[in-house]
Amino acid sequence: MELRQIATIYNDYTDKFGIPRQSGLADTESRIVFEKPYRNADALRGMEGFSHLWLIWGFSEVPQEQTFRPTVRPPRLGGNTRVGVWATRSPYRPNPLGLSCVKIIRVETSTPDGPVITVSGADLMNGTPIYDIKPYIPYADCVNGATGGFADEFAGYRLEVVWAPGVREKALAEGRSEEWLDGLAEVLSSDPRPAYQTDPEKVYGMRYADAEVSFSAEETRLIIRDVREA
Image: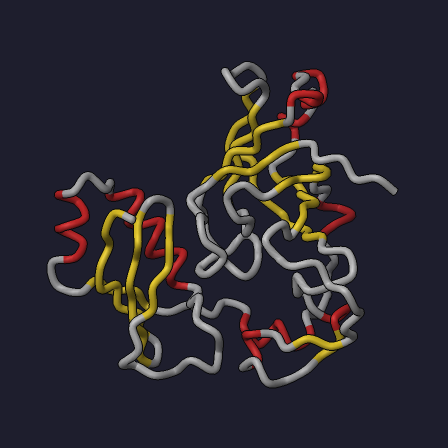
């Protein structure tokens, strides 16, 4: 079976660290730009009637597995508990494919890049290849009474995000918009740290768009300590 890359996604997730662990956890916008053989507006006909899409994509930044690993250690479980790979969404799998549900913001059939779909809620790194797009169909895809196994424990998990004195003001003075800063805070609220990292004195760093961001966390609160140009 040959997979053909039909599109590429572009957004502010320029580093793997900090990307939401599941789709729909942050409203960051992404642009889906089609590869040249598939830049045909007819392929999007009828999409305006849907609110969400399924994206099938590739973990392009994950090294290919040479041997099958039947168990993995999810970060949310502290990085020490092993569970079956088929019971997780770990990128370390024989076929490194991801599946994400995203919300359609707008569909443009004619841009300098050809047809473009703008979506929110993606958990894909900037530049990730997309192999297929399918509509989300509520009556079939939403299952009443479904359970989420160990993942249910983290449903709704959020940290309060605060800014260290003067950091937000400095970022605004340097040209960052209120919307961009709010988007950064929303991404950080889902806590990008591995579950085993609980040292309140530790300062973490991550790349977001063209910025280097540093933060620390204590119990239920995350503190943004600096935002500077990368």
